[in-house]
Length: 396
Ligand SMILES: *Cc1c(COP(=O)(O)O)cnc(C)c1O
Picture 1 (cartoon, rainbow, N blue to C red):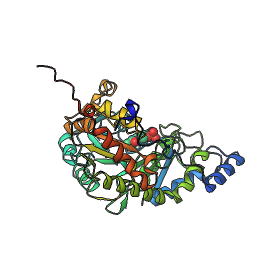
Picture 2 (cartoon, protein in one colour):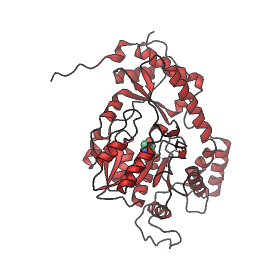
Picture 3 (spheres, rainbow, N blue to C red):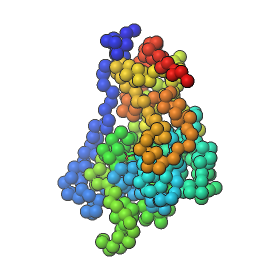
Picture 4 (cartoon, helix red, strand yellow):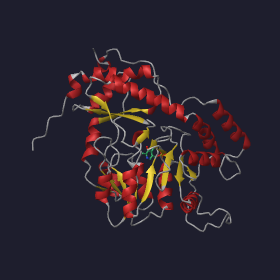
């Protein structure tokens, strides 16, 4: 079979589902109502941001939520509201989106990247424990790809050492750990509404928290240091304007009603991919043991034979099944290191950067019958000797 890269027939020629999905009638109605009200900002008396916050708190099993302009700022505000700042260290996984670390730097603290579990690629509780110092103030588990980090183990380490836990739930809307929704398990949890995420308004974020004092502190950080009920120009605390607009919230509030169905749809597609991989040297990266609901933001695939990644990614794209190369370890970003980020040895994250590729969320929204396209394209590309060409070793 001639590869599409060499002019052969691609495995797939029709497009994958687009993201975001088309507006549904409830979104259209609410967005229109907000636009016509003129109450576009969250300080003009509109209630949609507040309704969204209340609904997401309830969905996360926690009493409080604060909406933010994006999740990077949400993680920053959560850390700051929990008292994390200069002189403190925050432990983050080495295999994550760069914002997990830059949010820590924005709070003035030092991100300490630790290795991830060799099987599920989520932050390793043992690696967290090994990286603790007298300066450690918080742990930031990331619910990678839509499956929860091992929260029992993380929270136990935090409790033993008096540390805060901030869940980076940017990728995990609707996911659950041991039956508990993510976002409401740690001291704070942060969701993202950026364009690629499971619920999106183009941009946006939501911080969930349990303690009323922490809630007030986070709200104040996001509202220019104001305190509810105090003078408008009082600003007793230090804070910024990190608010979400009513227009964005109007896109998001109705989404909560269809999120479950979308999660089911992605789960069905992923299950079909997993079945169709039988016989290939490729497997689905499993979710951590405590996962009771995987929101399937991404499907992570592990390639068992060494491959020429550049070739594989280009050849898959040409076949009409584009894959994503995924993350590099945080330690490989010079800007982070220059800003003071620390990195513990992370051989598993480094290995994942070579051996793991992702199927992105929009593709997972396709009919399960089309899941075979992923395996068919992989089989075709991996059959090419060029996919396995390994760069000659530089003599020592
Ligand atoms: C998307 C993402 C963020 C940042 O979210 P924004 O809303 O884009 O700021 C943080 N952490 C992880 C793991 C993400 O995937």
